[in-house]
Image (cartoon, rainbow, N blue to C red):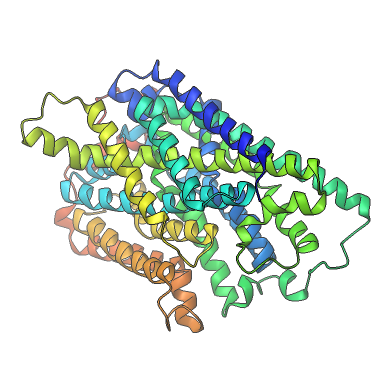
Length: 514
């Protein structure tokens, strides 16, 4: 199916993204501009930018696809995505900003005074970032193929090129402008068609004759598409989403762009409101899909239901226009999230891989901004190549696995690092290795769909939603090993804890670690 309106909408979103990024280039001059936008982003502007990068392919297309195919239990996904910011607000938002770090590895090194723990954190940031980037590229391919009939690989390539162009041009300063605008584009694109489709449904007086609103689909704690052990799957998913948010590198780096801890808290409160408004609309498409599209062709993924629905409800020009608006909003989602992830991954690759090697080889005259730009290209190329492979999981499921890995690694490190003085270097390292190994192993098996392992039974449920067991194990290992190695508690712990918890106006400002 080729839609001229869809092509125009996608093209406009890409052009606006590149145009705003080019404007941001004029504002980006220093390393601080490229990494954390000069630490001068206001709470409202930063909240819009966070909403822009956080509302990804899983939010725009994946939630509706899950509700459509697996039932009302999938409404826990938008709930978990939003509640995760409340957890972040209560536990770590302000202390992280006060840490003065640029990236998660920066925080790990500042808190634990260990290059080894920093290296572990760096590897996990890259792994989580790439796992999260893959569905952004795949979602772009899906959206472009659905509304234009083009090859999915073309959509992957378009997002990769636009993201590289923006990140290379202006870094975080540029991306902040882009993402703030894209939140409002996405909200408009998801809300306007939803109101129109609901109006058509109401005018028809109820569900269509072919509607499929079966008891199984609507049963609470009975969803997950008939998978075994739905209660465990539900609670494990909620745990991953609520506690995984604080471990997502592209989320945390945003708090380093606020001028102080108070602004970080205000930002988080506004974000919760912005996310709540957006997620009012995504389930509408899943429910209306069950009414108007009770079955999909064999080759069509449930993630496409949001884009297909308008032309089924109201065929003709209006349906094509609504689909085009949704396609443009979907592309804004892919571009903004992929940009934020690229920034966070590129920052780690630059600081921990490229810059040290260039300096060691006599490349000291190579500027940090140049190495950052090279790192951004590396950060995009590998997940782009991986996105061309076929996987057997939905967009939201893949993103959910990234949350599970984050909850099993950075969540224990951040919570204990911020609130527990007895955290030792060995304990932190053991927790990262244990949680990372268990969660990444479960994720790999699930994504690759190893025959005989991921089809049924408890093993399938434990691998598909691993957070309920990998996160507690990671916490337990971190605590027990720390208690067993009190001699490895960093000597500067008391000073660091004061820095994390004392309000900025009650302590002297010190040089931020870099």
